[in-house]
Length: 491
Image 1 (spheres, helix red, strand yellow):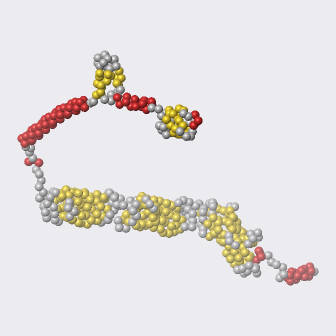
Image 2 (tube, rainbow, N blue to C red):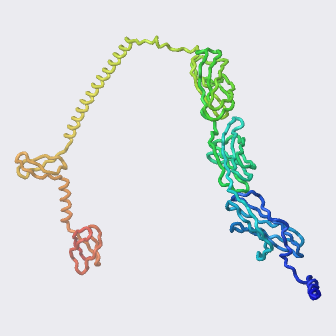
Image 3 (cartoon, one colour):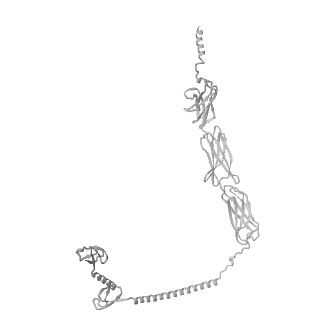
């Protein structure tokens, strides 16, 4: 009975199934487990999570993968999955701490509101890896330049890709000498690299290891000071010349020591010898000399060209470096004064001194005599000059006011005079001064007149114009300019 009653409901459901919509979440399902890539992982590494999702619905769907670790969330890109297709959803997460962490992952629809499906996983994150750089040695070759022996040390963990860069550091710039990429396994890796001739002014080499797409705990760097220029070269004469006093055409031998006290090896060079007249006497090749070492070389001059004392200049030339030394050589033809034959003619010396003293005394006596005559002549001349001046002085006669005595005083004298008879003192004035005063008095005593037919009249002395009322004339008027008094009369 019960089966017969339920049968209509089953039939109804079957008939209605094509009409009722099905939830899309039920039609999307994972095609596998959550995959963690690029492991093992260290702090600072990027962990890539991936899951394959299949869409069995009749319509396309947009989804993305969400990752949550220790409270930190990362969302992947949204992916459109067409009906009947499968797509990979990816989400990346940067490891912040070390340890074992639970991974909560969820596949959401495009709006991020509907959870399609989810799950959990586990990830192990190790401590951040360290990278170290070290320069072990620098070697130098004159022709090829520098080579560097160095090492890169990577701490325990996964293999890493790095870029090694070696620089020359000068006083003005940093120059890249070489660069290369390499993959490092955990542990130490050493390498020997040729970096060539150092530019002028280089004083150190730097090694820098740069990580490629990962983050080490530290900065990998090392440096080493170097010498970029050859220095401390010396050239010295051990023995020679042989023969000691060479003659024209002789063969001369000189033993030399070449010393390199610098840190760099030298290249091969040349040695030349020139005399005081800059004539080339010899030229030979000098081999390369290692640093902190020396070599002895024999210099042979096939034909000596000097017949007198000369300065032999020996020059060591190596690229732009020049070292030289000098040697004084006396030829056998040179005349040398023998000091033992030198003697002093004492008699001639004494006679010369006596003659010189006589000449000095004679010159002194003549000089004193001329000076005396010049003095007497000057005294006599001064005396005659005074007499002439006395004779030429003119005098005038003045009367003493106290007695009948008449006294003579110089013309133009003004001052006190004492009478030799009565001993009275009186003042004597210059006659020209007295005459001038008398003349001025006469001018003052002369009466002046001025006339006009108006109230305006001119001063007869200075032509100053002043006003004198016409109706009050004749009248006395005083000029305001020259202060003279005149009579103003009517015309």
